[in-house]
Image 1 (tube, rainbow, N blue to C red):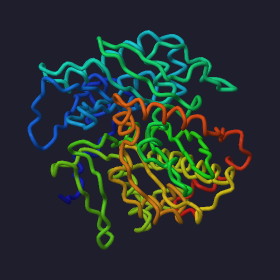
Image 2: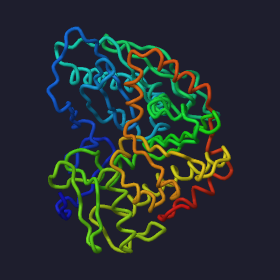
Image 3: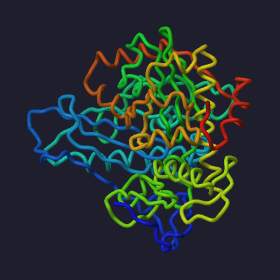
Image 4: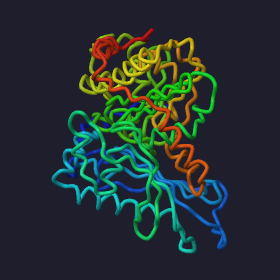
Length: 422
């Protein structure tokens, strides 16, 4: 469906995770969030003798989960992380845990129990599973004090690779690499099999805490870029998750913009892929300048939104360039570029390259892999061989702290421009 965006949706939203009577778009309101379940096309009939497991990815902004039977996904669901009201990014969330740690742990345990109830029919008895996530989210899950993650030298005193029990289900927590490259990045690496290739490969998980992983000469270079939640629609004036009513694509047809909406319904907001498309189209039509200035008002996006996306995409692109420099790698040496995360599933790679989300010369090497962290968690369900693989992945890593790299700040400023980054 393509449609012009109605002026009745030209409303501001708080986007701060708080409930209020004036909010027009409640997709980021923790008190009104509704869980959405996706079942396979054929009817799911529980098999009494089959062993089922749960795979869960705890993202900073959203949770995703799959019910697994004999290594295959039979149902999936997703839910906004209710911890967003304590902070949109990992550092703010970790700092909040110094005073509200027990509450943060309890709400995530409650959410996991709800997910289990939604995914599992009454006749299905789940006894085990896998929970992945970034290091901070796993600290909060296990009730650990994340103070060590909030200040220099940012060295974690725990890196997972153990079990935890929630609501009678024993979950395996995969190993993390560092304070800001967590088990979710390790699971994404497992699912893409990038460390089992002879070629140089790059993976970027674009989310609130964007991880960058470069496999080169039997070493995995890792870094974390603090992109913030803008790519997931959080905090934008018309932002929402990729659900029914979200504008997922914007198309420029003779300087007239049309919109493709999830669910072929009336548009209610912009999700991440729609944000990227809209910025690219506005740039094409001359409404958006290279420095991020809008030359005329827009219904869907304002200058504050543009600046949030500039900061997010600059962190990712500058992070990629810095990691490549550290490893002594050029874009011509990279054989494959994996873009992971729910945001990347519907990404228009040409538009993303046009606004400078990643180096333009990588455009022809892209594989959109969706939620690779969750896929990796599925692969770990009941599989001891894959558990050993993720441990080995961690042994081959070198962590790069971007803020300590002298070229990162310069690259960050250069990547703020809304144009292809060569």
